[in-house]
Length: 136
Image (cartoon, rainbow, N blue to C red; front, side, top):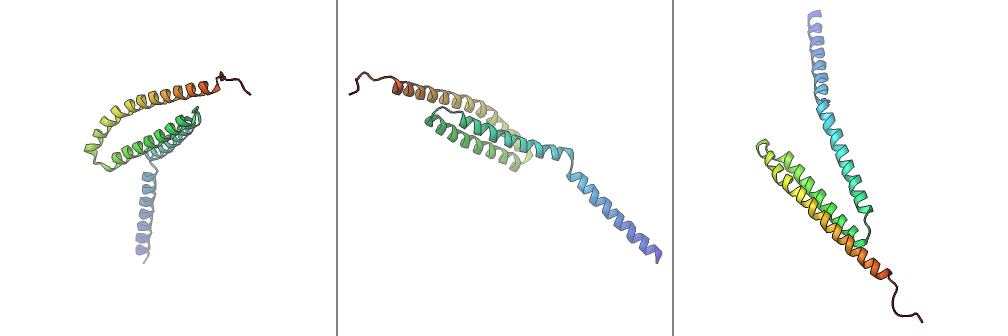
């Protein structure tokens, strides 16, 4: 009977080695880097969004930045979702509209924000100017 015990022990060791090899494959440095990079990217985006909204000068600009941030976050998550969902042969095509629309969107949103900021500063300066009518 000692032969059967040795065979069972050998099978058990082989199963343990396969299990530990699977753990090593799961903890591949590329996977760890992808997880850490994804977390850092989302955290950076959240911090940037917070400060972009916080550093606005008026209520119209703040409302515009909030809407812009929501639209940008939704667009980025749709883009990433499509990258994960589409077959490999079509994933590369997603970079074409992203590479075109991202810079154009940034330029357009920056111009609109600047226009709103100028309008709000003009409105504030007109309200702060002394009136011509005497009090009282």
